[in-house]
Image 1 (cartoon, rainbow, N blue to C red):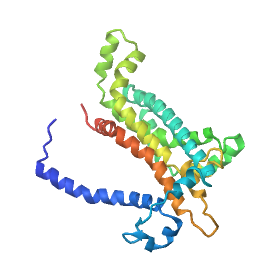
Image 2 (cartoon, rainbow, N blue to C red):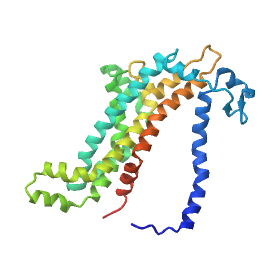
Image 3 (tube, rainbow, N blue to C red):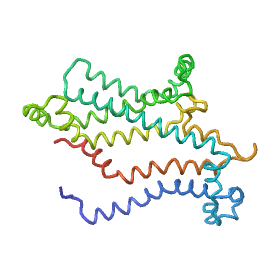
Image 4 (cartoon, helix red, strand yellow):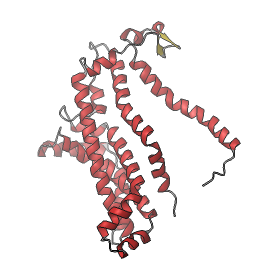
Length: 286
């Protein structure tokens, strides 16, 4: 489909996007610049350039600290916990949301709108309001500071969002294609697996990426429902300590923040075409 935007309008849009890009990138660059500063450069502006922005001498001591130094025992297990918990929570939420959204978009049954309304209400519910009841319940049934005890609350964050997103995608798939497959002898499951699922793949992939980011960035559940055995990176950053009680671990925290941001950036760069396709396919009818 040809674009109706003229070359001049595209040029002005490109110019207007530059301040937005700078506004977005400067905080990220600042975090990276802080992560490569030495302890002396953090407190002495004379050791930095562009004011106090970029260090004159780059130091990788903060990255050594979180990978091989004193913060290794806190950061590395938390990074592994984040990967495991977020992948499992994303997989479960996408699988359940796929079947739920398919039923909502294809079947007519009582309470269908109530399911969508409930999912929307749950996604708007304050996370902090659920922490205290879950904390008491998890301590009683033995799920406190465990991987399953963190995956289950993450489903409350990712599943409603996944249901709403996938419902929009399934509604855009013509029902006639599925009926034609059934006329040719395919069962309902075969029609879903061989016809509907491939057409909905961009939407499912986009939903998985969004659900993964939602779980990856959670702080409230992780810091309150874990102690050490299942703590994820966002919560672990709050427990970083400096060399002494009077030293702030600013550089180490920024180094850890850069490390946990890299997987998100890589996923977006590699799959940006699929993400854009999935987001736009659910918004256009036909």
